[in-house]
Every structure is written in structure tokens, then in C-alpha cells.
Image 1 (cartoon, rainbow, N blue to C red):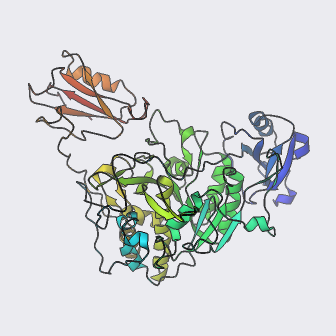
Image 2 (image 1 turned 180 degrees about the vertical axis):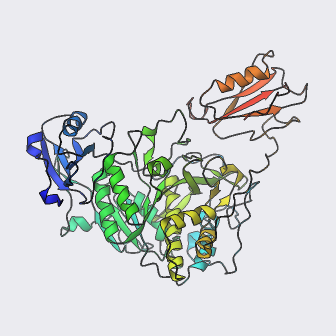
Image 3 (image 1 turned 180 degrees about the horizontal axis):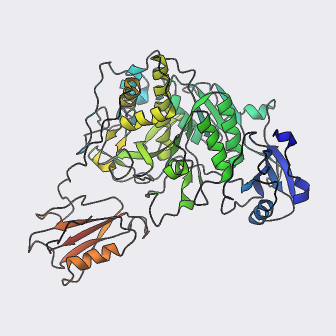
Length: 576
């Protein structure tokens, strides 16, 4: 039934004021959205079974958001009602790790330092790598570009037309007039207009108004994302952009420190889809607030999926594994959380951040979220140099916000390369090739689905070859023990040190292997157990050692997914 003929919500009757319509094709059912935001804002679809007019409404009768949601949910003409959540804009940089350095003076080879034990050998290309003259690339400051094989990838897409494969950047906008940034193919502002007191929403910028096209960045985050994606390259200025041939669609949802609501994201999605976006680069998010995504979120991202486009989402910067017993799903961040298979969004790819360790090898960045079940791959996310809105015009940033755009850029390059070769490919094929092409590292085996870091050139080759994925290599042999005296003993062990675990001595020499096993098995946070056997007489005086499942740096007892068994007794069987 056409929307005009459907049953509609009468705002004044229910203590609401209509603000603006949302996407005409929002629909479907879902949850109520969990806990509410602080403001008097919510989104409702005014229809039940028959279609209708989705819209954003302002609460005008003084009711709290949860009460208003309950009131609306009871109305037969309302299919769903959810709060207009505020999305988080991450800081421009996460705290730097003391474990490694990725500075401009570092000596690197293509791929970012020595290969860790168990890394899949890097693919060598017939084409000569492209070496642009941008100063930050030429002097090694942009270490992350060789680390993802950007020079080899540029050789593969030289002369390719990117115009059909726009990248939509929903963020804080982009600085206008930056000497090293292109003019976007289109740019918009969807930050709501409020009254002088800043408490009442009056509406949104509309087409035909000057403010509607004001995508100028007032925060700085979006400008850095844009530079990673598509800074002008080989122009002798500043930095090189990974997909510098691609066109950007820049949609601003933030002012300097305000904005970022779901209703703004919804409008951006519409605008970008109308402009033929193929990749959505999203380094923003909000906590899901429920065990499943709410109806509004599902509707928004289903539109992207129906259009055959890919969403690349930053995994977040809490430094934790996401899918474990003591991390509640309400704290998972959308849109990265949508990559969880149960939610049905097979077009969403979640990206973790990596860094260089002290020996130059690759490991997960300390602040990066991760999960070997649904965070698919990683990309460099520490000391990532890009364009800036500051007077210096260029700056370094850290976090998954700056890892995700590298995967977005890679996806656009892959789509364009496939089209140039006469191939039409889907987002599923793009995702498969991205996952196939990673460089596998031992340090990432238990962190992301693929066990690896983005390799753009290998991903492009994979999409061009149309060959099935090669099997993942087996886990690498464990490294030799290195941690102080206790580990410098003969014996057998696996993964002696894990970033999120530490080891506690049981100060009781009478404790047996069974005691140790029972202690670990009674701990629900421990997901697997590993026996450490040492020859008789080689154990420390206390007799047994096992892991305490917490993270001393975070002072959080709900972090580590691993338990370790360490006893002088010979095990009766294999522990797993």
C-alpha cells in the first residue's frame, strides 16, 4: 500500500512533534533498542503491517525516552520505535603503545619489518612497484603503505577508471581547500539544526540550502580518514592516498563536538546510495544497547546490502576480545558488530588495528578490539600519517578508525580493477578476496578470522584471478621461551605469553595437576587450556603455575580468553 494511504501516527496526540521524514523504504520489525539516550529524541515508523511514513519525532510532553517508547510500542499504527542514538566519534589518536615504534626513521622492507614466525610468504608481483614522490611516503613516514603492499597494488590499477566505485565516508566531514586532498564528488551536511539554547531540534539541512552542502570538517577526524583513502598522490606534497584515483562522497554528521545521530547516518546512507556508493567507510559507531541490532539500524544497513555495497567498519578501541562470556553484546559497537554472523549482514567487514613490535614484526595494536570469530582482518593502525585540518596540514593518528579506511580503499581498488578486466563482482567476492589476500602472522592467529593483515596487491590479484582461496596455513610452532627465569627451562609449551593474560603462581607445593585443571575448568572465562609439562625437578619451588584470567594493564578481571595449566605431574590425557 502506498505510504500516503497507510495509517499514520498523529504526533500531537501522543506528545510528539514531527521533525522530518526518514528514508521512504525503512521497514521491518525489530527490538525496541534498549537503554535510551539523554536527549528527547527518538525515531518511529508510523505504520503497522501496511507500510507508512517513517520519521523522526521530538518529545514535547516532558516524557522520558523509555516511557515514550513504551507508549508508542502499544499503538497498533506503530511498527517500531527506537531512540535516535548518538554515535561516538573516536579521538584523533589512541594512546601509543610502549611495545613498539613505527616512526619515520624506522627501517622497513615492503610489508613492515621482519616476518614473524609462521607468516605466510608475501606474494611477489611481476609489475614494478609504484614509488610516488610524496615526501611522507618517500621518507618512510607512511610505513603502513608498504606494509599493505600499496606500491605493488598501485602498479596493478594504473590507468584504471574508478568513477563507478565511489567511497562514502560518513564522519566529521573533510577540510575544504586542503592542498593534498581532492574535491569530493559530492559532500553534504546532515547535522541537525537546533535552537539557540541547543536543546530543541528544529530540523535538518535540506537540499537547496547552503548548509546542506557544507561538508567542512569542524573536528578533524574525517579529514584524516579522507587522506588515508584518497589523498592526492605523486604531487610532491605531503602524503600519498591508498585509493587516490577513487572519488569520495563525504557526508558530515558532526559539528566540532556535537551531532552524530542515527537519523543523520540514515540520511547519509540515502545520499550516498543515490550517488552510487559502492563502499561505505565507517570509523564511527554506537554501542548496540541490546542483544541484537535495533529495527532502525537493521533497516539502514539492509538498504546498503540490498544495493550490493560493502560496509567497512572499525572494530573499536577498547583493547578486548568482543565475543566472550563477560563482554555483553550491548557494548558491541555498530556497525562493526553487524559482522557477527548471526545478524545476517554478510556485507559488513570489521577491521582490527595492528602495529609494529620492537623487533619490527606485526602484532595487534594494544588498544584494538578483536575477535577470531567475526573481526575478519587487520590493517596498520598505529602512527598512521595522513592529512590534517591543523595548521601543520599533516598529522599522525592511531586506532582502528585509521585501519578501516585502508580496507575501504582496497575494496574500491579491487572493484575498479575487476571492472577494467571485464569482470562484474559482488561484495561477497570482494570480501573473499580481501580475506584470501592477507599476510598471515603468528601474532594474529587468535585475534582475527583470517589471522592476518591486509595485503592490497594480493587482494587485487585474488579478485582478478577468480581462484578459490588457498587453505590457511597451520598454526606456527611456538617460539622459544623468553620470559625471565621460569620459562628458561626444558619442557613443552604452547603460546607462552598472550597479550591479554598473565600468570599467577600457586603458592602451595601440594597442588596437583588435577587441582590445577579443576581450577581452570571452574573459571567460565577460560576458553581453552594448555598443559605445560616440565621434567621432574625443573619446576619452581611452589610446584604449580596457572593463569589468572585478567588483564593487569586494564585492571579488569573479565578480559582474557585463555587459561594455562602448569604442573610437574605427568598429564593423564590431552587437555584442550
